[in-house]
Image 1 (cartoon, rainbow, N blue to C red):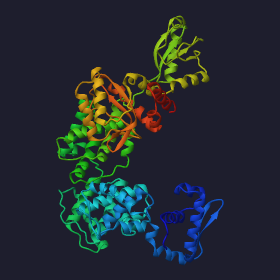
Image 2: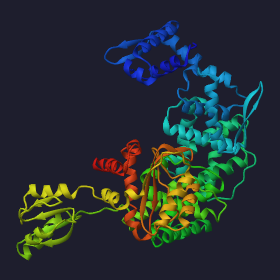
Image 3: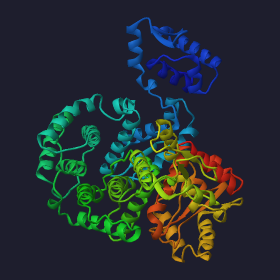
Length: 636
């Protein structure tokens, strides 16, 4: 059965798996309900000869009704390729990559375009991302007129690329046809699962579920490549632990009858490295002695202490955690084995301070080593460093409620009230205790609110009346004021100001922007001449784009004399690597205020969570920017 257009193929594919109403189909395919009805009629005409048709159930929607199971079954068997049609650009990229990585012959875009019901120009556009993906593995596509396009590169690179691709697809859609039918032999993943699990248990090789899943994908890829005549022939590696070596040899023995081919020593060596790179170490810190691992841990902790004032060098638990992770990490970077980190985007957005501290330390160490440590690996290290920071420092800085206590009764009563307050709300900081007369003489209140044993004239801060033996209602009223988030508003007041707020209404590139902002900060005495170069260096390592059009440029280390945030709104956008920044916060943080100022990062995470970029970008001045920021904070 041939579909006249791609939408009908996608509609047929969708309705095979679930029953959907007209409105939902119209929304998914960006068409009207009338067009949905027309398409369903067209599908029913195509299905007349195949023993099935779609019916509309008013309570549920369109569903497939099979009148002749035998004829419909023959349809599915005879035209499987037409039932697996990539629907979106992202899916087409995955399908194209899979075809290039698994095909023994040249491919022609015209034939693929006809198969997937799209134009050749559409596929040509998708090829840019395909080439970019392959380039990461030093793989290239060569085109010959009349013959088509073919992939060239080492077998190790092809397998690594295909396994990483299938891993990413499995994270997004576990039942994807690419996993079950296109890239791997049918049923291979199910066949390998118990075999590998029993092998790793037998040889005491501990792996996370994620790592075991990745190795299962690799073995399935290896089975296909070996059985199709593409073995590894020239890979060698240093020896590994006995249990890893024994597990790899056992797996090779299991794969030999499945492939029906002889398996070379290079295959076993590459499998050994992959297992060693992913195993979870369960050894005491004193037993770990790889020079590279020790050196890297020492360097990272020393760098963080020298440049960020966080001393984690005596944390035995952190050192042990880093060593156990880094031992296998070094194996991975030495053999260029990439482990995807599905949490990387979340780590960068929600733990930006720990991420930046770790990135700066690892990047500095990278100048003295041939190893290249990827963002994925840095993301794993961030989790360890982040836990260490939380264990020793108040990195989640909070501004606790500052309270004035007004009381004219005896000293014992005051102490009783104070003890009761602290027992119920330990986060309260009682800044001063004064009498009624002293309160009336004050012109302003610095504390966040006032607690009094008698009625007072309210000045510029809220007043809660509390008896020596407070009622539940009085304690609840105090609680409403205590539990208000004051940290982020306090950060906004302390480190943001109109003098360091700018709206860019003319084209400007990133380097020009840094120059203008840093020059002003240098003239005002906030930073010295080295600051701008450090900001440029930090940006060159990895983009400081937080996401959603918000960027956080800053220096490597705490180089400012005084902490300030320079806010820049760019309605036209500033090119920021491969993305565009519309709201830019240049951070200048000093060592004297580093612990408190680290809570600034929470502000930016809040803006991300509230999807506030557009509102912030469209602010006309500092007052309106601040109003939007406060509104975001008030909804937490």
